[in-house]
Image (cartoon, rainbow, N blue to C red; front, side, top):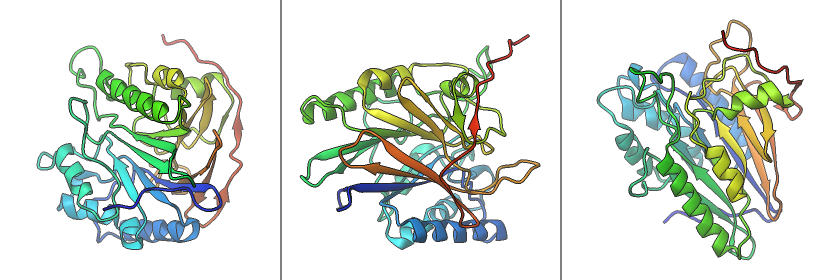
Length: 317
C-alpha cells in the first residue's frame, strides 16, 4: 500500500520534473552521465514526487524496452522517492511494446504512484493524485494526461502531433467536479502534467511576456480541443508542465494559468550549448500559487529566467 502524498510540516510540497529522458541503452556513457545528474538533483532537492513528462524511453532504439524503462526510473526508485510518468511520442514507437504494456510496467514499481486507467477514456496513463494537508483532507491535486503521439489523421489533411481528446477532457472535468464538491465547493489548487504542449504555448510566446528560452519550434498539435478552456472553467489548475520540445524551457501565463515547459533532461539536439537538467516545482499548502526554478547539470539553480517580450506572429503565406 503506497503512502498518501502529503504536504510537509513546513507547508511545502516539492516536485522534480524530468522530461525527455529517452533511455535506450543503459550501458552508454551518455546515459550513465544523465543518471548521475538525476541522482545529484534528487539528492539536493529532496522532492516529495518525481514526474517524468514523456519520452521516458526511445523505444525504437531499445534492445530491451523493459530494461530501458526500469533504468530510466531507477534514480527515484532506488532512492525511495514517489514518482509517476506520462508517455510521449517516442515511448511506444517499437512494435513489441504498447503504451498499455508500458503503463502496466510502471505500475509494478514499488515507488510508482501512477494509477490504472479509468474506463472509457482515450489514451493510456490518465490519472489524478491528491496531496493531503495537516488535517488529512485533500489540499491539492495533480492531473496526469496522455497527450498521445502522432496525429491519427496524419495521412489526410491534419498531420503533425496528437492532441488531448474530448473523453479525456470530460474525465478531467468529472474529477475536478468531484474534488471541488468534496472540498466544500472550493476548487483544489492543482497542476497538470502531459508531454505535448497545447496550442496556447505558441500564443503565450507570441502575445504575452514569457520567461525562459525558445530555441526550438513549439510542436503543439494543429487541433485545439479546448483543454485550456476546460481548466479555466473549472478554476482548479494553476499550471501545466510539458516536455517534447527539447530546446524550450519557457513559461508564460494565459487566463490565469501558467503554461510551463520543463528543462530537457537528456539532450537538446541544438547546435548551441543548452545544459540539461530538471524543472523544480514547489506548492504551498493553503495557497493558490507555486514557485518553480531550474536545476541544471552543473548544479546551478536558475530562479530568474530571462524575460521575452511578445513580438506578435507573422502571417502564414
